Image (cartoon, rainbow, N blue to C red; front, side):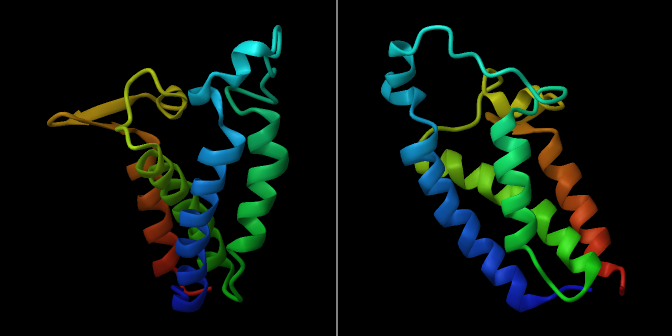
Length: 134
């Protein structure tokens, strides 16, 4: 069941965290990682890094809290998409087929815009969870 209060918190957090991630966490755009030799983080599983698994997932689960379990889960899915999309807004560039986010499940194009395949899938799952009254 959709919970407007927790959803607003999720949207605000997505915007703020995407800005933090762009400014402080992902500084590859400023070339600082070129100074760090052999710093290749091994995935925990698939293409998911320790940063995503041990920091982002628990943080997203905590921020998404709602008394309704399905709204809570739906908020996590929406937060993942919003944070990722807003990151690209902060970055000032569109998603490209070379970006990490497209390696998860590929991507497709809508005109000249590249959309990671997991975005609409996550939003569909979130909508289904919001409609489920638990």
